[in-house]
Image (cartoon, rainbow, N blue to C red; front, top):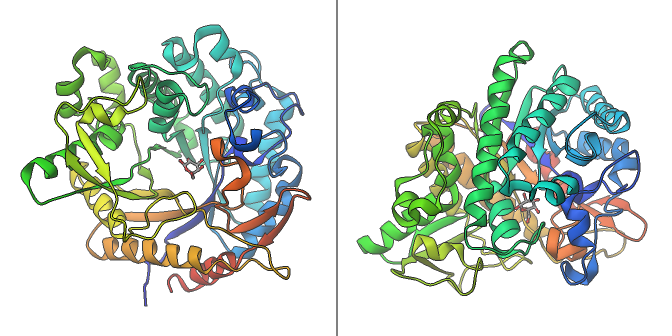
Length: 455
Ligand code: GAL
């Protein structure tokens, strides 16, 4: 029997561009993902989020699906261009109304909203006018947008996440160009991430001062795959440690210590921007909890002098680490290795490095080759995935890690970014011809897990 402490926070998660659709309704402005997905060749089969799961019109039905599973919390994101179409200026009342109604519907079902302010859909105007996250002004625009959200929703929302996976937004968006806005450059990721960190710092400061009376909590949701040393040799152990610092320490260290990891500064020098003293001060201690998105594990080996395969293509080259997989590890439909023990090690890494913070798993889940047969979707592979990863969570808690919650990715099959609708991560199957939802067997399993607080 795998058990969890009383009050463990069971949830599920989504993001705006991946589910909402209604891309030109309700006064919504365009985002960099609209432009990217509409550019030929950028997404599988040319899929876009124009309609997605049509959650904008079906959110009450989706809240009912959550209530049926008995989740205690729902993590969703606000589309910045829906509430502030150009990224600055007056709020769009219809956008405010949509999220306000969603929040009310959740609360009416006893589901606590956890709101992400940025899950990658930057207002397109900010990309075109100031080059998005490459411009320091973007941080101040973000702070103003955050203020608008605290102002309109903070009476009911007490859990905020500033950024979802800034590593992905910076590296894939401004380095490799495989995600919006599709920029390719060597140092773009370090510059973009720097502005996201500044934006985080400014917003948290504002939340804790001007909005202190709202009495909520705020943090970030960086991602980290685990990097296991390929051999027990010191060089590989150091490479694996460095690789985790280049993914997670990049964000965790500024939030906890006010500075980038030493290993990054040593290898990147002035390619890595610097925080002012004031910024370091604002960053230090700017997470009320440690959010973490986790999907997979790789081996890491020391690779001194590793050269990137092409500009922006290989940011891990900067960490001088080479990654590989054990062919024996099972894989998800994304090709990602299933290695639950990696999550246990990652939780301990966070626990040690940051002095036992409260940790919340803000995403974990898998794509599987789901098939609709006889009106049912049986997904035992996904249930096994959850069992494996949750057993490691429970073990970590037993070992003293302060893990307080888990959000399964995702409530629904949705627009999986550059992979389009071909990759299904949902607890609920979505027929993208009719937009009908159907609980997979994993949704029923998740309901029983929550009811029993274990399995
Ligand atoms: C994360 C991301 C989600 C989701 C998931 C599965 O990187 O935050 O939006 O797509 O991965 O790939």
